[in-house]
Length: 193
Image 1 (spheres, rainbow, N blue to C red):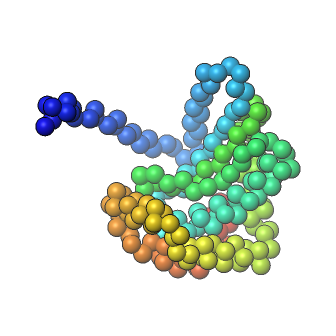
Image 2 (cartoon, one colour):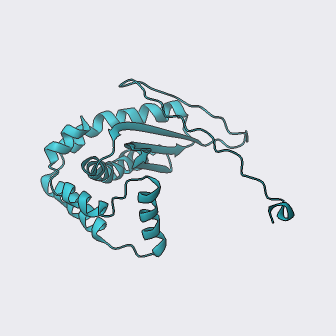
């Protein structure tokens, strides 16, 4: 059958290389668009936190929920830096962190400098967040995690991730909710530091 269908084995997958960088080190990858008329640029800043755990995942989820809103307000609305601005959790191969992304027609080095300025000033914002607003963020995230998946694809994706990552944490959401309920504003600021 294989001869008749002219089936061949697939090419080997590329080897994944995971680099370990020194604390506070920087890597910059610049890639120009092949289209000279395309003047947009995008900058993604990744702040690596470390290995994944239920506590780290829950803390990053809360941090990114607060940071995403403030990044949009500061970088997109006030500074009018770009038309896409987001802060989100990024986790691959057991390593997690915060990914800040900005897409704009602004010079990428200027975007990078403004992201760095935002990251530096965000600590003050986080530390001075009114306690009731902090609690609202926690409650909102807990409620979001308690919502059942509305589509089979979402549930299948969540479960499939557990299989391919070899974690088999079928109660991940419940464990993250428990971890979220233990996060205080002071502990979140300490995590950010």
